[in-house]
Amino acid sequence: MAALRGRVLAAYLIVCIVWGSTYLAIRVGVMHIPPFLFAGVRFLTAGAILGAFALWRGERLPRSGRVWGALTLLGALFFLGGNGGVVWAEQFVPSGLAAVYVVTVALWTAAFDALVPGGQARLNGRVVTGLVLGFLGSMLLVGVTPAELLHAELRGPIALILGSASWALGTVLGKRLRLKVPVTLASAAQMFAGGALMLAAGLASREQVPASIPPDAIAAFAYLVVFGSILTFTAYTYLMRHASPTVVGTAAYINPVVAVLLGWLILSEPITARTLLAMGIILSSVLLIQLGTRPATKEQAADSGAGRLVEHEA
Image (cartoon, rainbow, N blue to C red; front, top):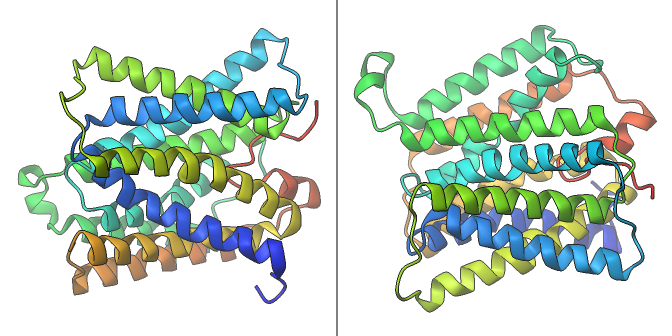
């Protein structure tokens, strides 16, 4: 952490603060606009803008149908499954709690990385302990005993857990595929494909755009497109090239803290002792998993991170 200076430190702070603040912006948006239409148009817009920028820079479109199929699959896992779970769940779950649930992406990633062929991760004692603690922390966030599970309001938590699993699976598959596509163009294609699928899901479920959209929802949408998608992705890519993946990964610990504090400050979402305890358990489980994971080689480190799924080659 002490090695972060100048532009690298600025990129790190952008990733920590902006990604943490997106949960609040999503919460504001879905209070007025149906979730899949809201997120679908967001990622279609961001993907189109980022794709136009990539083409303007001279990046070339892939010619292989297999590559386009892989990018579409990753877009579905990241955005329809992953982000879609978040935006749908935030109709029922406060933004701060949603951010803590999404930390479990690291738990799912450890499991998938050990189970999907092609990786080097192993489920040792620390990793298994971390997975168990993460599950217990998630149960604590739900706030019920096992006997009460069948009678509790679990739609939001279940959507967040499944969405986190979808994002983690996309991360692991992205590392395995090693697509030879420029990072900016690949991310634009994944966002555009994911946005199109989310928009189709919204139309299929008969979501309707309200007759009038308040200014705060429009502001939340614009913030998510410009800052939550385009700016933060650029900062994350820059950070991955100039800092170790271990340091970059610590941003995931700060995101929930930012989300909880913003939800409390702006939307008056409560912070209870149970929330803080559950957050501590989940973050401790993530730390255990990191300590129990075999250090990555230089080649693996270059491919690590949820936002950098493809190698930067034309």
